[in-house]
Length: 237
Image (cartoon, rainbow, N blue to C red):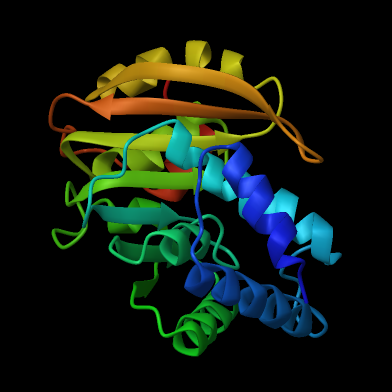
């Protein structure tokens, strides 16, 4: 399906070394994604080399922007078809991954991929703002990831409540997203976070990317996250 040598070399260029097991799993994941996409709307990216760069290498780049300790509890909010959650888990099977999404159909696909690849993760059909108010998820994670889900002021309210104190929220964005952090500083502070970094970089055959990192320095006030309608109607400033 994919050119595994291409993936190995592309990942190596950003400092990620993939072993043979990971490369085989990425190959199988790509095949399953393309096959499922024939009947479901999972991705517009279906060419093998584009999958390598625009899904796999793009997702792996977050490892360069924040440390993922061994055995870290990670929540991937709005995981969709498993990006970045499954990609990170393939590269680092030691991670205790929770994959969250509000669309059940996508999660059926995610579960099938995990089963095929013999990987373990918790898969949860839930909206992020609901998860943030449940004791089993609120302030339980070392790292929370989200890839192209929403603007930072909205995304922060979805994700920061899930973080333990001292945890890191890593938001994966496209080009020219650095300004989003400036506009969300008030929201981040209100939710118990502190802006850490906003790094723009380029990935070969993938274009400009931005990873925004926020550290949780104090507990999130109990009223957050608010219901979805309130978040949409009046985003935090």
